[in-house]
Amino acid sequence: MAARRVLVTLGNGDCGRLGHSMLDHASEELPRVVRALLGAPPLRAVAAGGAHTVVADEQGSVYSWGLNDKGQLGHDRDDNEVGLPGEVPVPERVTAVAAGNFHTLCVGESGNVWSFGCNGNGQLGLGTDAVLVREPRLVKTLQDAKVVAVAAGMQHSLALTAGGEVYSWGNAANGRLGHGSAAKRKLFGASIEFKPRLIRAFEALRVAQISAGQMHSAAVSAAGDAFLWGYGRFHQLGFGDAEDLGTPTALPPLKGSTAALACGSLHTLALQHGGTVLAWGANQNGVLGLGHEKNQQPQRPSKVPGILAEQISAGWKHSAAVMGSGRLFTWGWGGSQGTSLSFEGRTGTGGQLGHGNDFDYWSPQEVAWLQLTETDWLKQQQEDGSLAWKVQQVSCGLNHTAAIVEISPGFVC
Image (cartoon, rainbow, N blue to C red; front, side, top):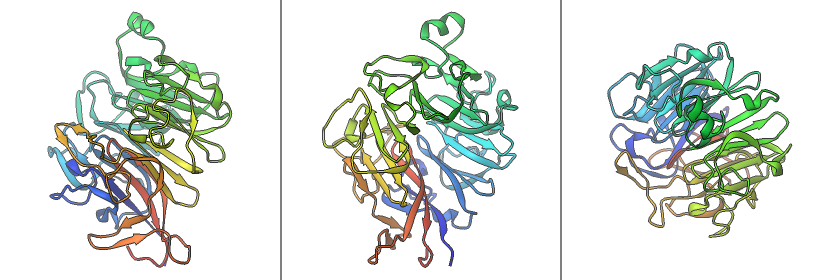
């Protein structure tokens, strides 16, 4: 029997964002298999957005579910909430996806970008003639750019090309698009870019990875240098001050050592070559993983103890890291301490850390169990020391989490 790749979701179930039922939108405090996708080809990419989830399989099909009030599911349907995965009619095979608060981006195998959802701040890159788009639409400005990856923030978007160039569009407030200072934007144009625009600061180098947070952005060069820009009032840019930056700026402590960056709401994570994870910014509910109430707002990158990772993800106020072994660690806000998130008038519970409760965790904690069905659970580490399942990829949304998991041979899902 071969290993089987499945999707699990956990956390707030409002709006159907977990994908388990059209009627019951209960929250989940353990990773639970999305059984509606068990018949799909192996999964390759997942993105957790504001209150919706998007996944792509190895054959290029895309599925989405959750909140759909702005058309962010791309199903071309009027339902405001969809509790089960539905296929998105993208005109070509999809290789990468990204989910913002109210918009979604897909990269086709041709290198084209398709967008749908809210365009109120230009985040779809379609110009000014569309405010809300309910089905995939081609971003024509990027048609010849050969895009390989996209990132979606709250109201802005980034695209990375095969040649290492970066484009940005959407809300330009606080410098998050990287096109210069607020003064320059005011002089030469509006604070919204409705179509993708090349970030000139990267012309002399090649970018390998991008990330978009709520109001700040990041990129890693092929040489391993970390660049950050945008909203910096909570030290999420890592430069030791609380200033916004309108131009991508290299962070000296991470020069030549960075494999990936992940932007959350008011915090940032860095994955270094070798697996060390660094964190900085606002430490709300322990989202930095530095220990209980320690360094409430580190101004510079600080080492997250106890983990060596291969992949990282940053949500609103929770964080996650996948180890090389396939183990998953999470930390930050779990729904406790009176903290709640009201999204589109809804306030739900937590559980997005996957530890069987809604507690906050100030240090990384291993996710030990997976829920197969309503009544069946599977512990990751077996008595003989083997792992029954391994996490391949994780994505943190505002207050839910989604992960692609490989079930080991011999275990029935």
